[in-house]
Length: 118
Image 1 (cartoon, rainbow, N blue to C red):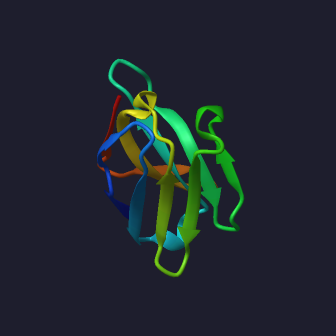
Image 2 (image 1 turned 90 degrees about the vertical axis):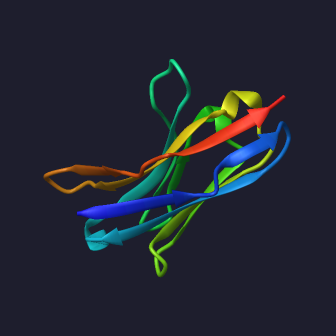
């Protein structure tokens, strides 16, 4: 089992910045990919950014150039630095940890609210 604890959400004005953190504990040696997803009211959960253990990253087109995902393997923590925030970024942000070898397992954090006011 893997436990994920997120922090760093909050209320910010458009154009502002926030940094989300996700600390992992438990059987973290099995985790290959960590990332952030978000879910806005009335919408499906969507990928924001992911990072592999080796540091390869992938971003949603809507956040490229504004969000940066990073990973501190020594601290078992993944970060999401968000700048130039827009009201459309308002959502609950969820940390995800994935074991990609069979059987694949996904772990989720409890979510942290990010609200961007116009």
